[in-house]
Image (cartoon, rainbow, N blue to C red):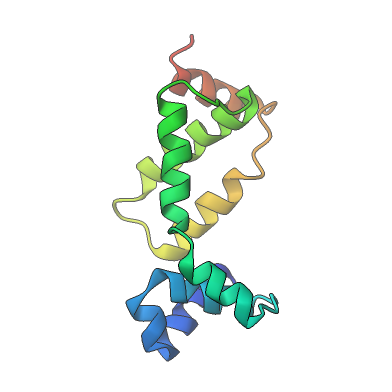
Length: 123
């Protein structure tokens, strides 16, 4: 079962997951094989949202601090471009594939390299 199918199944069967991303993530992690203790679940529920942590990292990097490696930065720009080009009309499964596929992009492929150069504003 892919991620889209897993999330759909969880949402179909859990009111808690429909009401809370945190609960959705907890159920997803457990169904994916993580054997979380009650203490770990309580800690996770008390933590800031994962999106908040990600957004803070992103904000620092937008401000030029704590930048990723060049390869990671370019891969993120490629992923962002692919999502922007497809998001308005894409189904969740399509977006999942785009996001997952971007992790496996090999930047030495000439077409990908040309696209990255174009996204970066290089000639």
